[in-house]
Every structure is written in C-alpha cells, then in structure tokens.
Length: 185
Image 1: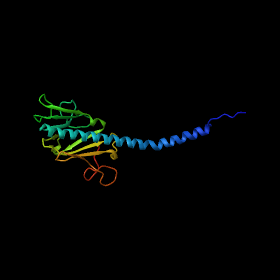
Image 2: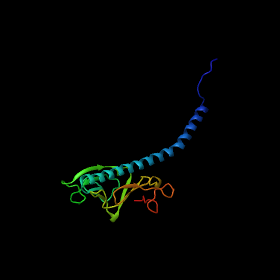
Image 3: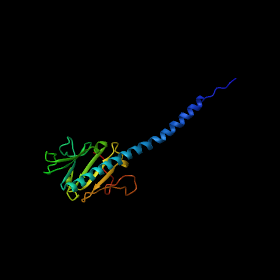
C-alpha cells in the first residue's frame, strides 16, 4: 500500500499558531516604524518648505510670508490640517493679491497636526530679504494618535534657520524647552 504525503491537521495548526505569534510580535513594531516614518517625513517636508521660503526671500530680495491657509489665498490663524501658503507679500497684508507672487501652495500639514508658535503669537512666518525671520518660534508636529514618542519639533531661530529639537533627557520624547511638547489641541 502506498502512503499519501501531506500535512496532518495538528501540523497545520502548529504552523498557523507560530505564524500568528510572529505576526502578533511584529505588528506593533511595524506600527511604530510607520508612525516614526510619517513624523520624520512631515518634518522633512516642513524643513524643505522653510528652506524654500528662506532662499526665495534672499533671491527675490523681498519679504516672503509662510502661513497656513484655508482657501489658498489668505493666511488663516492656524496650520492644523491645512495647506501651507508661501508667497511674496508686497503689501504685508498676509493675503495673496494680484501683485503678489505665489511661490508654493504645499500640503505638509494634512499628514497630522502641525502648529506654529511664534513670537508675538503671530500665526504666520515672514522671511526677510537677508534670510532672517521677523517672527521666530517653533513648529510642533503631533501625530493623530497623540503619542508623544512620535511628536517632533522644528525650531526657527531669528536667523531663519530651522533646527530639529532633540530628546535631551533620553525619555524618548522630544523636549520643548524644559517639558514635553503639548499635543493637546
């Protein structure tokens, strides 16, 4: 009599159990990797946007305004879930007029919550023709799930150069001065 080759039910269940355990162990690590990648990507895009604004101000010898916008024509009071408007604002009214030059309408803020906190509480950022800024402060990226381990902060100094804030105390959370970033909106 010839014997059939194949797997028994017990062997199939054992393999499925092992696959399930490996999947269960690997899924949280993949979610963390995905969240970290989203945060880093948003900060990279924001840093590129600020670099373009600074370079445009220097090249065009004009003030360049960067702000969140609802309609693509006027600066709004916040950046949360809104595109970013980058333009040469001739009359400094924070509104894209016919005489103003649109440089870019970007979309980094739609990935998560991005907030701008500036000197004087201004909701916009203006680069001067020398590359410095009139308003300095920081951008805060808050992931949608509110997990502070994936929060990021980009500090814009008076010279107009952005730098990423670091985790100085080793707790896995980027520091906002002396405390963790406030991602509660």
